[in-house]
Length: 429
Ligand code: HOZ
Image (cartoon, rainbow, N blue to C red; front, side):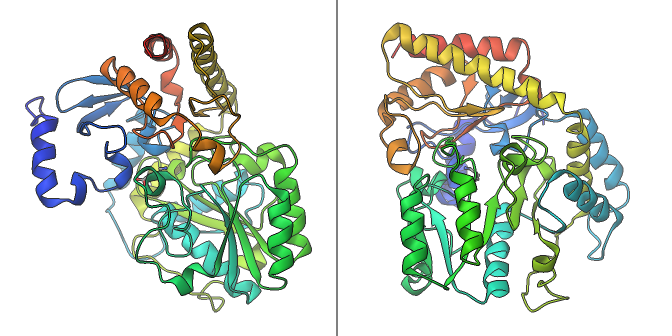
């Protein structure tokens, strides 16, 4: 795009006339931190270039997909090569098979996989499959976990739903919501009670095994193992939503790192290399309940789209080098250490949960282990911190309740500069 692109303020004024809130996804709005969103005309490596010709070090990474940084040459080349052959066929294509092979190879629990066009479709379809397979209706989800915006799952949800004050969206019939049981994350007693009260009725439990949508939260030791045990005992399916964590926490996601085998897994983001994608997969006997083999219907015109598959395959091939994960963890650790040190000097309470390339900054002295403790974070202080960072060229998600993401491109000057900016921002609080 030419550098004469209209400025963000004029684009936003035009967008507000035609697009609700001026944004095509609420998480992009700045309403919870104040101000107006900037528009991006290009992105390269660890940085975004705005329509106002500002360069920002980006810790949103297109909400997760950009683990190799923006506009990686291998991904760009793969898309360009696929483009030569056409954009969509509506038939099976060779890329889909290679993508399925890569997913099955790397994600421990997945024996068969079906592609979708978004993470929302993946989680929605996994829930339907769990219901169809078990012939039960109820599902359990956890407060603050966000699994996209399908009706069964948009209840006590995190991400933009929480940021903008509607964790229980309007438009979901009460009769639907009654089939979703919402429990606190990290609470074994609540799980025991829910299974006891709904014996033989729970089709599945869906969880972000490391939660990234109410900020970044990790499970207590043993919690995921307990979840595996109790679901098995009650004949309910365990569904891991690894849309964010798949191929990010490890090649095989959280399930590889924690050695837990869910029945179904949802993926998205990284497996599309920046193009629209999702996938769900798991035990072959469950997956074979899907049409055309079985009675659970699920479909998509652009599912397995050749361009998205080509981009995703290139992204996954780059991740075949396991050293990448150790390198990303060092970057995350550097950032966490800088924030903690600055906060300590200034006497500001802060929690910085971090694992590999995911992190959050909560301004609270209470360790964050669920929705309620995440909400104890001082949102006003976060807002000040967010703007101080942005004013100095560092972009964090415009919400106190979103995870931050790093990419391999943050290595070197980008992470050093970001640590300097964050340190100064905390000192100025
Ligand atoms: N899971 C993403 C943010 N938490 C979704 C991004 C979006 O809603 O646009």
